[in-house]
View 1 (tube, rainbow, N blue to C red):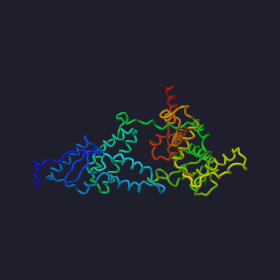
View 2: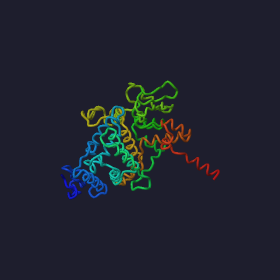
View 3: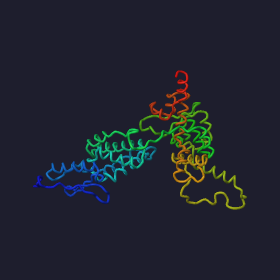
View 4: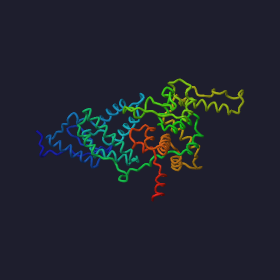
Length: 409
């Protein structure tokens, strides 16, 4: 029988390769977090207290034996099955993997039952130290809470764990070291016009269509003739998949005469084919290069003979949101070239100030609709269920406030 009164508790130790603290209880190592941290000291004290209560033995229950890394592996497998749209994983899967990579070096081998509010705050602080913006830090913190709620619902861990993590509130603006990001403004029409001149014809029409309808970037990329209802004067575009479909909501994008004029040249094709295709854009580029050729046709290479048979990359049947954004950024670099000699941080700063992204077209359309027709109309055009979400996209018309102040102020 162990002599609990004289038997010394196992020591608080450091794992040199990883810099983590651990304690060995009954032949098993329990990792506690960063060596010397308050969280690891508290975890050590908690385990030793249970060890003493057990008469010199620590016997975790099945729920208490599962490690954090085992919870993360199970959750990522769940996320890949659950967060899917159009047969493919959504970005939520990538965010889940990203936050698990931040947790693993600190608490991967620790017991999931020992992961408490202080551990969550430690992980959150590592995100802040990495230079991640406050809003994204809060979103990643919520994803950690969601992961442990899921684990508790699957009876992998005690329900008390997610309950304790829910006590950690989000970081507040001005009360944290995490930096703030500026709100995304709408892009002005003169800037759009200057950029469109340097875009391929297909990408330029995508920009025009999105500016006129206020749709999301993925919705303009997914547009097909079969998704259009052309029975009325104003067409209705009903995407096969959209952002809020998992909430059971319907999405209708109204296509007026100007936007219809942009689409007309893309409708004479298979109804299941995408309207805006990179392969069409590449064909037009090659045709323009052939037309501008100076070498006589009977001299040099004939068109198409100098192409790689097995190219690493080839133009596909559909634009992705990333390729659409990159096309706009390349056009911005041509429309607003950086000063000569700009390199490194100076070049990055110039590009960040003179590049715009497809989502800013949605902001511009929402702001114009709100200015002319009011907030409710902008809410309908954007497809939001709540007006407070629309206010994020549609800028207020401050000219009205100036006019009121001029007259009554």
